[in-house]
Length: 206
Image (cartoon, rainbow, N blue to C red):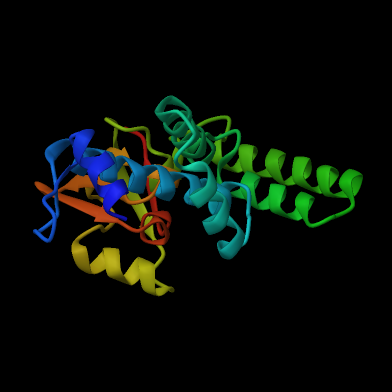
């Protein structure tokens, strides 16, 4: 143990003296935070995107976090976020991927998925009139006017109490990794919403 501590001290990662208090140096703190970030990013990708069970994802992240270059971790995060927000993919696409991995009939599953995609596209992109879409699909930096809030479920009632009501102008600020939190601005305030809360809101593009 003391040999490992001396090695870390020589690398400038810890402040160490025999029998003394051991603390992280700024460089050690930065490295530790990077390891934690890599672990969380890898596990999140395995669970949320690849639908791997928590225990297996935890073990895989522990094995990989020390060896994957930072650029690969960053790209995995970007890919996961892209899948969450891209209108050609999104959460429904990820759910269909999960069914695919579980051994669903490939041809039948794809036919049903294509049919649903076409129906969703026609619903979200009518030939005439204003365009409406769920709040999480509002591009960052854009504003929308709230047209409906689904208050039949708890997430919708929560945002209604916050002031997200029909007629309110809301601006999308950013989406977190894997699509949440959903950061928005309205009535002069900044809020971070859980994904189900944001999905309860439908907005119209001005």
